[in-house]
Image (cartoon, rainbow, N blue to C red; front, side):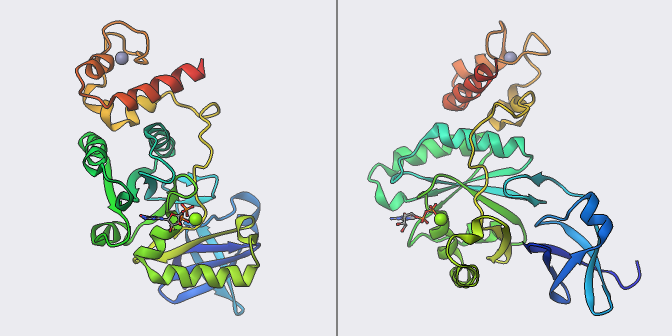
Length: 284
Ligand SMILES: Nc1nc2c(ncn2[C@@H]2O[C@H](COP(=O)(O)OP(=O)(O)O)[C@@H](O)[C@H]2O)c(=O)[nH]1
Ligand SMILES: [Mg+2]
Ligand SMILES: [Zn+2]
């Protein structure tokens, strides 16, 4: 395509789309056809062109995935921010967030905060090691902790944050990149307090990657989700899939179930199975 530039949409306010590209940040509007058929969302990689001094978004490249709330595409990972204290750690909340993120075809990454506030660190490390053993990535972060590995993990990716209010999401971003605080302060000033929760969605440059400022996965409601393939998305289950007696085993009440046997043999994190089973029972 002649004279087309490529970039990533990093901010949408009303009908103004800010694109990060190799010619810098430009503000564009989508051409009419796009507006009607498939509005661009934050995270979209787009082709755009300059027509009479104005930038127009011509087309959207195929999306890797697409979240609805917040509306973001091409999300590489969800940072599940989990505090061990204030608020207290809940494995069930963590497990449900892992399931929700996985069902959206986004990679879950566990970020444990506030380890500086507890005395029983070894107990928590043992708990989170069981997630590492299953194949989940776990990072620790708190004031004074060396966060270089987590920073590298954010570099070049699009991340969304999730986790309970008070878990330390904002603090984490401020700690990882002091630039983030400046950006959010400017936005609050420009928009007035509280307004940027509604019609505004934005990716922030943090550690050379992009992070959404609107926390995702706030609803833990599975009732309207298709969970039929949840078993294949749970990393703990993966070594034992397709070994049950019944091909369509859902691993709840069936006999000769390889997943249930692995739970009994303590080869699967018991709480992960418990939450999986509960979701399956809620569905009935
Ligand atoms: N000691 C300690 N306090 C933390 C840590 N992370 C966050 N906090 C505090 O926890 C409170 C809530 O943090 P905040 O980032 O606002 O949580 P958010 O609601 O998830 O954005 C604030 O008072 C933070 O200073 C941590 O790792 N250690
Ligand atoms: Mg916050
Ligand atoms: Zn089974």
